[in-house]
Length: 312
Image (tube, rainbow, N blue to C red; front, top):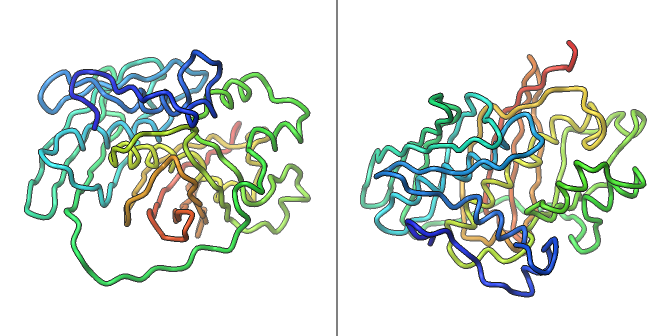
């Protein structure tokens, strides 16, 4: 588990070299772990860094992942996270540190509850409630994983965009080099209005962290929390506009909920199946199910996003 004062550093491995920008720089997995690692500045108060990026707001998955780290760091014993419920209240400012204040709501025999408030420049931008559960025996059932192509048979996201555009615009090229996750869409990306006609509001991607994340379960849980916000709202947008073309809408996450069903590793392939049951009133609802390579349902996700037409 992350230490309480020193930053976590992962050992160099061949897995790390898969995603290293150069032979001396950190891998994407190392950068992700460093981003999720927090400085404890007082009892129940942590500070996370927010990288300078060419974005209008801090990526929501980063804030959710860091908030969950803060909650997990206040437990006296390891218990797996079983659920989280969060609201994105204000856009975070890139480059400005975020302070996470943790309230120890409950420490029971089976369940532990934490409430986290994220503050930036004196204003609350995000809050999260997380519940941790001591594993217990019980009956089991699940819906089956969809029958989809293996990730190795699918193009990487950056390669698919390059194939269509001929080259990646510099902002996308920079993002691709620093991306912490290998993302592969199960269905080829659509680029024209004709291709979007009669498309159902669904999407599915294979994902895995680019490099080893070590063996701490909390690291993997927070990494999947980070990743869960990357593509979920695709299911809302996909019938309306190309996912990686010019945007016609200003999009923002409003709230986010996750349930963690089984242990998993975020640096091994997982399938993220996503669908949108409704979009109305400038809001779209999306739900996702995450399966491991063996077909076990490991995480369920719900999110609502804001979709405001640009120039409207």
